[in-house]
Amino acid sequence: MPDDHITVFGLGIEKASELLWSVMTNHLTNTPSYMGLRDGFIAEAITRYGECSFERVQVQNAWAGVGVGPEYGPDIEVHGAKTYCVDNSSRIPK
Image (cartoon, helix red, strand yellow):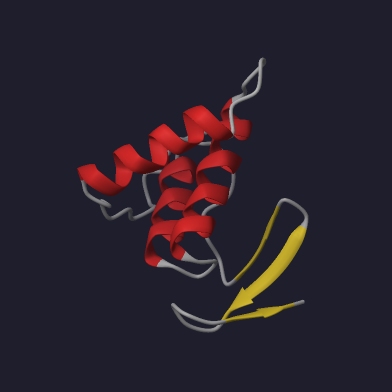
């Protein structure tokens, strides 16, 4: 269910279009799902900008805002790996 209490900041058209192109060419399967697309966008944001980046947080929160997956939190599981982000540039694997 969509959550209207999640704040999302824009990435800008250039970053958003680069993420979209990469997800469409590298992460789509023959039977895509919303959760699969979400995971692809998050994975691509992590690859390009880092685990704890502003971009990753905004991508995850945007999907959560439309009811697909949880919003970003300091200790979130994505693709089975837990990471605790202590600031925007470092992480501590758990």
